[in-house]
Image (cartoon, rainbow over all chains, first blue to last red; front, side, top):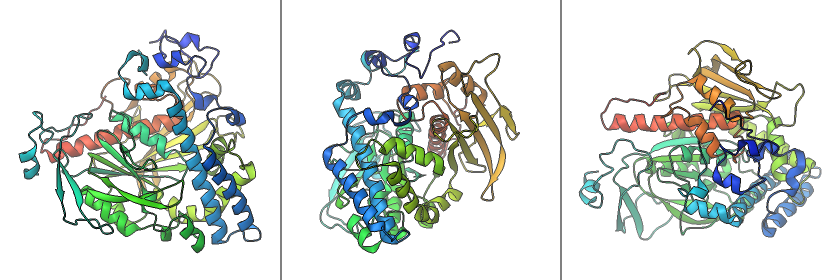
Length: 125
Length: 403
């Protein structure tokens, strides 16, 4: 184990990590080991699938409505409820994106049904 | 239970007599009756299942605000028990429930008494107790804990409406996650273990930027406005629940980088209540001592900004607690293994299980820092608690797995 000096977060040393990386990470070349750690600032704007248009419209509508409701009414129950709706829809949008990512990736889908196969091993030591 | 064992003819290895073996499948006998039991709001024929292995599910509560990592934690928890958690098959595609072999996770938003329109008309947020039906929540969690099947409403987060209910059968482990699992005293008393995810304002803002900036219509201003508008209700109704939690995971900005407010490097505290039945807090080196530890040095090389641990006794809302803290992040595999080997009372079943779980879900947010580490540890602690309770019920002396 001591010799396994594998990078967990940088793409630059991706190859060095090959012996501990799971098979399907190898297949998805270019993907980093800890995507969450690799997100830098607003780079997230351009990554991952888009929100389904229906929910996306709802989110932007709800923001507009909240801004209107809160004009001169900051601190009112109506204003809080309007921004709470924005939060609820933003969370729903995020979940929808995650689901889409899963559904769109044939390997993810295959591995969900066949987690024991070689291609789907997620820990290789 | 005598009835169910009489009907369980399908399995040679009847779960009725199995003490604890995470991962086996339950054999269930299904009865159809026209009795109305427990279902207050919906008449007609009812289905209930008697699961032989289930006498009384162990009930776990997880509280956190929206967008603060409840789903990630649940995925880690169900993974510790083996098998992936999936939405109920063939049910409402917008169901909020997740089911695995051992565990069923329900979202407490399903107990909203006011739908989105209702809340807007009355000017209350979902955080407000007036928007939630605690009587029904209590009745149904109690029914599940007693081994009964329930018909739970579904709150549809996309439409903002209450959809027709879904049938939930008692699992081995029943998790209620949401805004208010510890708000109502009656519900709180049903919990065998409770967790609160306490995300500091700075980190919450950073996480929501990460989640929402890609969304059309959102801006830094709208993200800030939403957090601020919800804050009074959050402080009044959600935050006070942390005093009741058996374990609190507190997420703060790092102290390793001066004036860092990017929320990329995190300082995470695991606050563990002392004296909780079936729960032995994790410790570093020497139980009960105060320790500050920088694992990076001659034996372990870490990259900037490094890793820092702290451990020690403390008080939290008048309770004796043990606090384990990690600041910084893991960049390499050997750092994680090194840290795991220095922690005690982890309730792992084999050496390296924490590391294995973290690597298995390396794509989940927080897998390289204290949030992932402590969520994994709490997951192992819950498995241990479950196994102790089952062993106790079976009359065997509780023997927890410790490495």
